[in-house]
Length: 147
Figure (cartoon, rainbow, N blue to C red):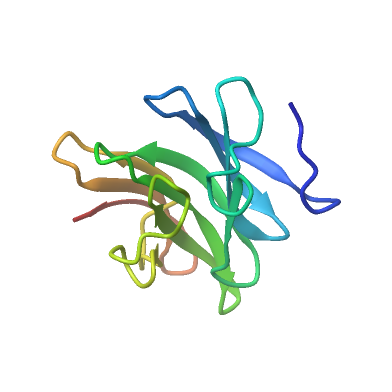
């Protein structure tokens, strides 16, 4: 299955399967976080986002690299954005229908000061991110936990 959403530069970098068998993929289209949901047979699920796709704009160049599902059905995407001449971690949380969850961060988006684009959920429901953080002239190993 392929989808050409923007004519060029569409990528999928992460995938999760929801308990009902629907498939959510994340990546980037037009330099924005993008989530796409498919029915179990591979057709776009038009009940998700806008016609099966949801894009989220953080900054100049955004991409989602990881996905995880919370026990309440919410979807968390981790990635990066280019803001203030540097890449930094970016997280977004979506309701099961693909719409940003306003109760997370600011309008469903969070720009942690460090952490990363890889996101997992601990058994207690807390988010853990891994990636890099700008140190003294170089990038340092970073791990962060979010309530």
